[in-house]
Image (cartoon, rainbow, N blue to C red; front, side, top):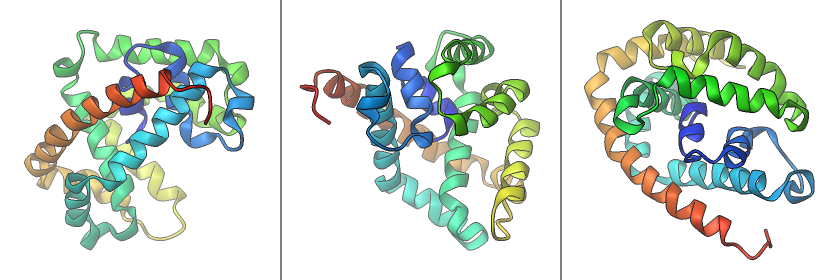
Length: 201
């Protein structure tokens, strides 16, 4: 999943959200680098990614993308799902998306001293361009995919992903809705397990 989903799936727990948000940017012995609840968030991030990567519905959605986008189908699926989460945000949260996004940026800014260095640059642009809210707009998702296409080693064609989404909107929306309900349940249960762990990683 992408940034918005990881933020949402932290279930209004600030320290967990920090860890969940930076999960792709940390390496090494995380329990020696961060406090317990941030470690919990990092571990939750990894569990969410593993659950997503292995899920039958996600794999089916990726198969639709593979003929056109090959190895980048998993990245595109993650972005599509954040798009649908933003688009249908009011179904999942009583807090307006703009307010939620601002609270995430403020939380991360307030804890910038402990954020990984390689996260700080993308975070700068994320906040400036309001990625979390922009995911739910055609302009925002086009900007995101075009930016990603510039940074890939091969011809990813990711700048065409928004058009592909528009042509197959109902199909991917259905995959998202069925999958995300399962992911919410998984994430809630996994978070409880991680918070009740005995301290060993």
